[in-house]
Length: 208
Ligand SMILES: Nc1ncnc2c1ncn2[C@@H]1O[C@H](COP(=O)(O)OP(=O)(O)OP(=O)(O)O)[C@@H](O)[C@H]1O
Ligand SMILES: [Mg+2]
Image (tube, rainbow, N blue to C red; front, side, top):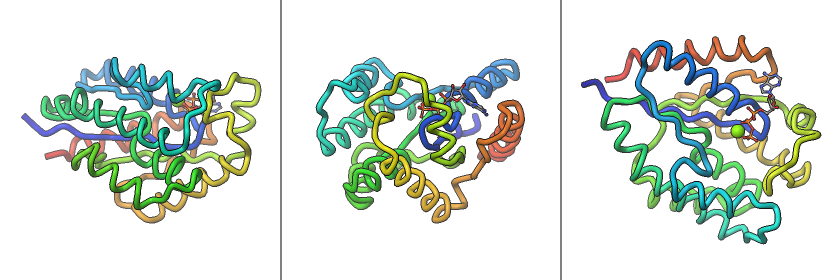
């Protein structure tokens, strides 16, 4: 049996990650490609409970508690969901993964990339995406798209916070261009979906 493939999708709030993953998984279903969709926070029974704590606007979660909760969620999903699915040869797709923690908690909350990397090693023990799609939109477009929507605790952060998240994603993509593929998210959904399909299928066919 060929090995699985671990794909993550990243980008600032409202960049279209979840929208694109709906289109991608619908097509994977039609083409009978075995996949597992993981979302963060959430993605498992325990993960969904952690998600509620993290996203509830009324919760006074401290920055360090927030960081640890994201990694608790990720450790659970790596053990319970991601590793077994990769072992079964599936295409595992994660709606956000450690790049999000590097961008939001490491950079925007100023907790530091080194600390995030140390916790990543503990929580994920080498389970890394081989391909990451970075859906790039500007913070201005994010504000426009999410303008009227009810915001979760992190989305409700101010403009400067979201600018820092954007800059962090730009730096990550620049530093690891072998893994992170930048996709322009400011286009029609169908055009973006087509490009993502091509990128993912290229890698899927090359897996060992
Ligand atoms: N290509 C696009 N053009 C215009 N609007 C879009 C596009 N893709 C998604 N949207 C809209 O933008 C909003 C945010 O999309 P979506 O929820 O998929 O983003 P997300 O990256 O998953 O956000 P979050 O980080 O908050 O989970 C939705 O209202 C969606 O319908
Ligand atoms: Mg989403």
